Image (cartoon, rainbow, N blue to C red; front, top):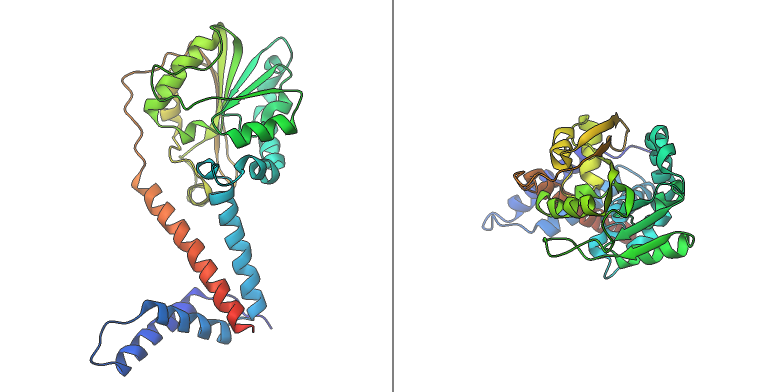
Length: 311
């Protein structure tokens, strides 16, 4: 009969090994953590759970974290085709959530009469909801993936906008709607100020901004999942999103999901606020990043140990 994984038991083995090692080496109070962890993992696996069960659990958890934190992370695009993996793993889930959250408000903007700019379009997942659609992204792999996956839509790579000297490559008053979907939480307030100035320029005078972003104010469970798997460092709360856009709100709604909570807003007459302070990367994010990569390494280490034991 399979016994469940026990962190308490593993901790017991660690302290047992530390005490044993110190008793055997009274002249040397320094110990090898590598040796202690190795011995603890071996005893833990031998005494508490079957090797195959432990290996499968470790591989599943490692895969989930690796996919979210590495394969889907645009920061690694020079080395990994993150656009391909994002489309592969996220297309159905993202489209389902977008349809659920946005369908009450999409109809006036989804036809040919409304030209939509998807800023931060990624691999073009949301292009299926709009007929007159243009997507732009800073990641070349995502633009190439989107172009191949949705050949009837237009996608273009743009440079990061980090100053007033950079622009979105479209004429004034080109678009009826600019969509900001799951991208703003990757950008700090300073750069968002320049981006919103450009968005205001390319929007028609009657144009709208449509924003859908994760909300930081949520339950502890959802917050933990979001922080653990989210690559963006600037997840804001509702008040911060409103201050950032500084627009006349026509529609707003909060959607609570298990994975993350979303905030949706449609506004016009956006006036980027030059006095808004920059968004610091909170200490929590640094801690979570260190924790996640530590977990990844421990899982990999545990898998290697179990693999050796199974020989």
